Length: 305
Image 1 (tube, rainbow, N blue to C red):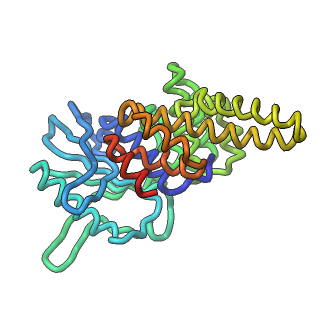
Image 2 (cartoon, helix red, strand yellow):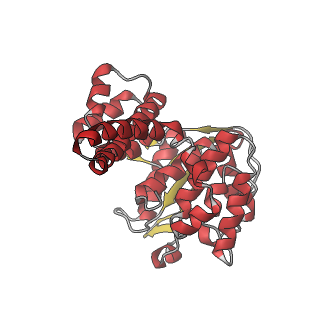
Image 3 (cartoon, rainbow, N blue to C red):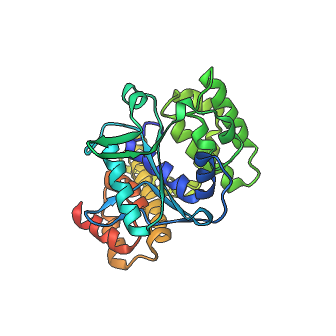
């Protein structure tokens, strides 16, 4: 669970910033904001997709966030930020505040410049290095709590313990489970998984909105199939097959529910195509669907796989 891909971390942070746009904007801009509105992240021309785009209504300003695990990119980050700024300003005709949030300390991240400069062109943006930030504002806000595990502290394990304590104080069960799951995933960038397991209750992770009863249902179905086969082929082989079938069934059920929430009810044809996907393909679809806004996006993904 903790060895996620860089895209998984990126998508998780996109999810948090889209769900809590006001908290992210207030934290990064250092001021209390009024009405905010999450905007589409796909910009026109040759399509590129920003991580997070929010309209700050009372300020008549756009806030653009990019979450980065790896600094190296093509085109380079400074040029990308200029490209994003031009497209956003052209589309909305508003000032654009841009922030790159660096998730992990690396030599390249430590030296990343906060501007693009070429001859007569100069464009500046803000760079936030999470490992240098004070964790206190994040510890006091449930929306930012998952990011606190990557903030500055000595020793780091003490900060992880603080986050786990704050998570346990969240009264609403669904929110507590969701924040816990997000915090544990991001903690995998910095901490040993054994320490994460010691500080966070594993049952909270598995009861989170990411899993809930979905994986458990699939696992139980798979175990039943495996046990039936085990009567004929041996208990050990049957259990192994059951666990594999349970994993696939759980992934499938989860993906279908997330897609239904993201793009609406699926046609029988689309659902049939999804049921034919392997576990690996389902996991890839789980990452890709975070960027879907319509069923056409799903159709395009299925056609390109």
